[in-house]
Structures are given as C-alpha cells and as structure tokens.
Length: 235
Image (tube, rainbow, N blue to C red; front, side, top):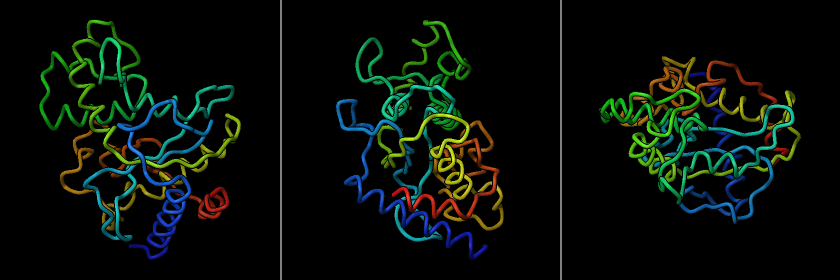
C-alpha cells in the first residue's frame, strides 16, 4: 500500500469529520424532507451501516459521492437530487421510487436483484431511460427495497454554491473524492476494502464492484493532490 495514498485518505476523512461537525451530524434520508433547510447547491457523501474503515482509521467508510446540476444551465437543487435517491414518500406508489432518474438507485437495485434472485417479472426490465406504467407498477416492490436500503444510509453534505458548467467546483470535488476513495487501481493493496457482505459486491456494473463504491464514473481516474487543500478551504 502506498503510504501517501493512505495519508491522503486519512486527511479526507478528517475533513469529512469537520463537515459533519459543521452541519450538526449525519442525516438519513428516512428522516429528511424538502421542508428542512438545504443549501441550493452542494456535494454529498454517503456512508453505509456495516461498512467500516479497516486500513485508514475507524468509523464508517464513504461509499458514494455525488453532486447535481453540473451541465450548463441546469436548475436542479441539492434537495431535488437527494429526493430522487430517497424515492417517493406518498402518492400512488408510496415507499417506491424511480431508479431511471437515479443511477444510485439503479446500482442498488441490480445488486438486490442479483443477491436476492428477484423474479424476472419484477426485475426483467430494470434500467434504461424510461418504461411504461405497467412495468413501473410491477417494479414497485423492488423500488421499495431500494428505498429502504438508501434511506438507512447516513450522509453529510458540503455547500458549494457555484454555477453549473464544465468548470464546476462541485464537479471537481466530486470526481477527485471518488478517484481518491476508489480501489479500482488498488487490486493488491486496497484501502478500506468493502466487507464480504457489502451489497455492492452483487452490483451489475463491474466498476461498482471493483471500486468498492456506489459510483461508476471517475473510479478509474487519478486524483489531484491539490484537491484536498481546495476541499479544506471550502469547509
């Protein structure tokens, strides 16, 4: 294991502790709604019960990093994005959600399908950009399980109110955080590897399984060491 890599990961978690203190502790989507005070824009960091750091220190490991409104002129706010991961609270399909609007939900769904052997009549059309109403109705039990899993995951966020676009600072923090945490290129010496029971081990996307994160983008990239200094300045 590269000693500089592990020092950078340790510094990253020290900074996440500072964010957690700043916002008053981790939240779960099971206990959040749009009436709470959310920043307009930011980057979020999800943890997962049962997934402990093992080489960089103690505590839960970060398993997903994300943001929103990166494309120029995008209007999506932080809570809009988090609510897509949270799923539906009430309405026609309470407790469900739309995995076609959240790649996070899609990844978790494929892992549940593979691990728990969901029948094809429910899971056979999982994925894609759209589906007719009758397929979405059949998928509802699986969407509920996805919601249950994601809503139990603690998360924190960092407010970064920059304009959407290719030079977004939020995008910079997101991709460098993912690159730093990813074990994609650390086959022989992983840092904080996932547990053998981590749900992501059953994910359909190979980059989720190989990185140990609920991310597929940026997992095979190198991180810029200056980014930790930038992250600290934003906190």
